[in-house]
Length: 272
Image (cartoon, rainbow, N blue to C red; front, side, top):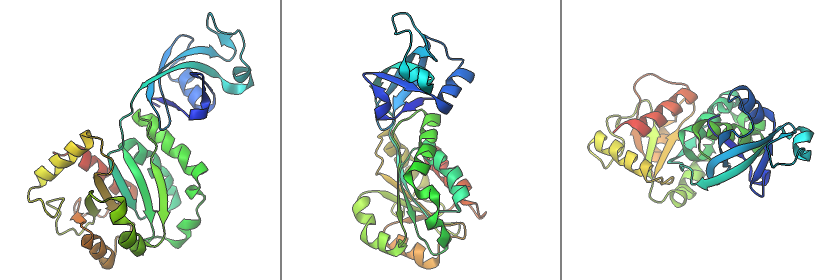
């Protein structure tokens, strides 16, 4: 945790009280003590710092000697000073989801890497039983995304939506959701693997454009589509290309979904 995040309703009159894993991290890793200043923030809100004013009933000078919240297991009380804007997401992701255990491992990393909107789509080779996974419930995936934000030190929570009909989603929703996005489809057999956009001749110029977009914090500006571990079908790739996606390949090695997604995001972030 490089930044402790609080839900909006956890902050009352500028004060937050918390326990659990966050408190354990403060005490065991950061060696928390009264008066210590922590990096903190509000989920989907501003970031900044907070000063520890009480730990398990022990209060700083000027604070109440006891606090019901702390006594009831809150653990740590802090006074928040959140006045800065968080770094915003820079890329959106269309993903044919892998198995739930892989997806569970991947979600925190997507938040850490700066993904803004995640659309899980029902490509042909997606396992049908995935759609019944408990991971798709917000109460299960939200904590994973928040963990990723706390690692990155940011606060803007990715959104997650599902679309079981891939063809309908691409034909009826995609252009409205991303009217001006630079669109990339990851494909190991990409004929255009030396360049990232069909209308840009030089790959270096394309990556420079992505970096400029990322620095402008325009989350809608770049859209990446990553297929299932069995790969996109020819029909699916053709449909994406008909909607202005350019193929991009990391090479001839076929990667697992979680490896491929992180490698692609890292590539798009850093190469210029």
